[in-house]
Length: 442
Image (tube, rainbow, N blue to C red):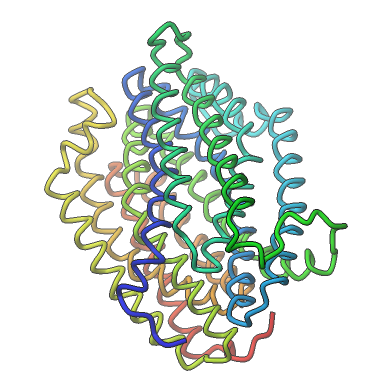
């Protein structure tokens, strides 16, 4: 293995980008359609959606650890071990997601009531989450497939699955939210149901294509042998910290939105639009985060730690270039982008200052997140968790101080994202320069 070219990085990254874009389209569709139903529904989908995403991060964090392990085994040329990691991870992730789903269904009011001041927003959020959480098992299983394909650097199927999920969601959300073509007009319930069905369709595609592809036979997937607790334990030794890291990260964003909810329904509606924009334009950066952790882990699996820094630098440069193009487009068509999410002109005007703040924050994110995922690629996930935890404490204190204590405008509150990206990146650089990660065995 040598330092990858920009073309190599792009070949791995673009299907991941398309896959993440599909997740973004699900969120954008909910926001855009519900923005035309009402501000209560728009704000409720933000709260319910964030809580669901926080739960989803359990699977996302676990699958990230699986990806690191698969990349390491890929570097070691150990195909059978990859299959055993995959099958045992499916056992663990499937059971975990089902247990979480059952718990949420029984305890939704208790989860939301302490955080939501508006009775209307609370009722709508509860309804949205009750349906949305039913897709957790299917979404988690799809994440596992994405980790497998990313870990072996064979990512072309990710874009096809993404297209299926996005297409199904757009069509069904249009029919079920507004009640077109004879379908019932379900509003916020319809948005959640459409998302669940789209996730089921994406998973079915992964299962069918994986079983039929002869190239993948060497990995011996779907053997369904007795669970190997040693493999699950080893996977959790890496994934457990990543799971906790992502849950803390998204849980903190949920708390961040609770600060905003106390600023009023207008500020919450603005922030839901900004959240959707943020998640959309973060996609190139997130895809490249997966690329850098895969390449770093593979290099260490091949006993080539000297390549880690050049790989990170190369991907950072690529990320900054990709984000510069993305944000130039976003800045040029800023008002048109915001109007996708709402036809309320006063809400559009209220959103524009926060929109420009978040574009600037995203450029910093494009650099610092790559460096942080280089740390994850070394498999020292407990230190990555420490970086995340410290950063989130500072981030939430800053957000609380600005939003609740000083009662600043919503665009000022969103400057908290600069604090998060900057501190994460600086601590990651310190670790990579000083940490003893070269000889870590997983």
